Length: 387
Image (cartoon, rainbow, N blue to C red; front, side, top):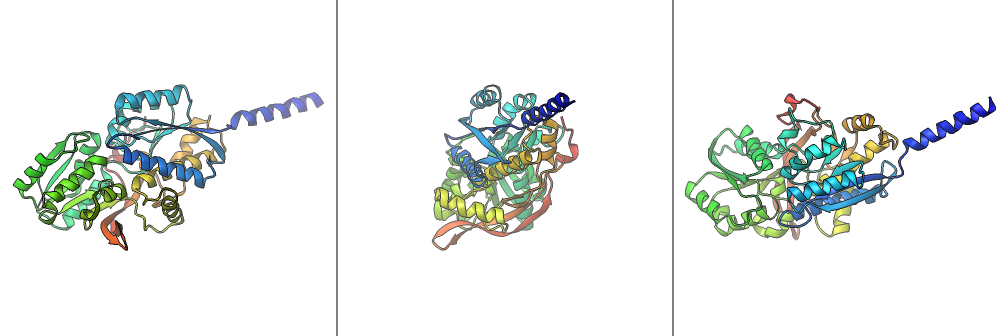
């Protein structure tokens, strides 16, 4: 009996040791070079700040994180993700900014049964009939911020609007979202090249069309150049320009300067949102990096918080995939934009705000104007067929 009890005790001890992991392994694949690199760098910096606030742990466990630059190239992204899964044997993947890259690696990620925590890309393909049990997005479904601006522009009673976006999945989702809530006439719907930097032809077309307003989504360097060229052409004073938050965020404001003042944009996040998580995030981001945070940085921060809560909920037992997925689905934490909640398709249900670029003291930054949507759900959740 004595030996049996010793054996039973040893078995329990070994079982407990098998359940606990020494560290949480995260693969962070993002765009860290090229025209879109500002977005990936902001997301990375926000993620790293969250880790600092968490004592360099996720759910109480030390973190091993590998950073890879996808160079905004699908083949490079595939190679980086494959390496993270097979060589590094990561517990979570995150970081991709651009939807076409996420769609390119999606099957590889899902087949490996590795939870993907998207801090930005939210393609419609993963929101409805194609949603996946291993995909979670802490930011938004691609259409959402555009839907909010469509509603706002519609409320301003502009009779016709010229809309344009890059010709890739997020660009198509963008204009679909805008049209879902704007009920006036679409003067023209134009799809530009990805990473396009010269918009002379499009601006000439806008001038000739004389719409009452223009709405565009252009990420990274493309957005900076479009606004600069639109202003240089004198159109900012003639035809109001409206933008989603990621085309009018801190990085764009810094690059464009005073011409940004007065531009309205929509976002699920703003620096002034009043909750303890956001207050600490904003203050420490400024102190750590010497610049205002962007929504990309806020999303990176939130991605780390989600991982930490899930690891804590499963008590470090990341080998129990079903329990980990349940923990992610039912997560409860205060994000940078308030209490976080997933919809049934693993996209957030959240408020979306109107911001306006303004002079604040000696700086130019977004100011919170009001709320466009409360507890907004994406249009695809009703078609959910979780794989």
